[in-house]
Length: 232
Image (cartoon, rainbow, N blue to C red; front, side):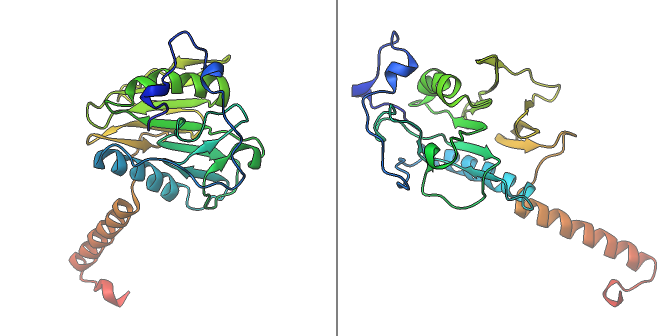
């Protein structure tokens, strides 16, 4: 999403700290204040990441995964209409519960462990430059990725000694998230999660379909052996 209105865009000489000043602390429990995602592709991609991770970690209650939600983080933060929240982020070691927004000082000072920005023509420069600096220097978010649903541009970074370092892809073009202990990679023009063994993390619908297909195959084998699967 857009970080800065065009009329407020800072010069290249300004530091991230300078660029995030002249604001007030919003009240606690404030609603998220985010504009709609750029396109239907961006919306679908955000929802895909959320539901795949929630399915994979369905038995866990120690994380929060969401998208297009405002992060309120300090008294020096720019006004909410100028700074926009990440397209997708994950916070670990926190309660898994709905939130109106992510307010750092109400969440034991926790910032996202992982952030994914979905690039578009209007946000790509900000996502690659200003937001990357904010996530590196202020949030200290360990894993940062960006992905363009149109061009399929994909990059990832890990925070090492206070600076983002480029992640190297494996032979399948996947990038490792140390925080999630998962790979991220492109599958059928979408950004997906993969297990450490390289298996695709399914959506709930894909998991249900796969489970039904296994049942159908087993039933067919039983019938070949002269056993009625409905009698078992």
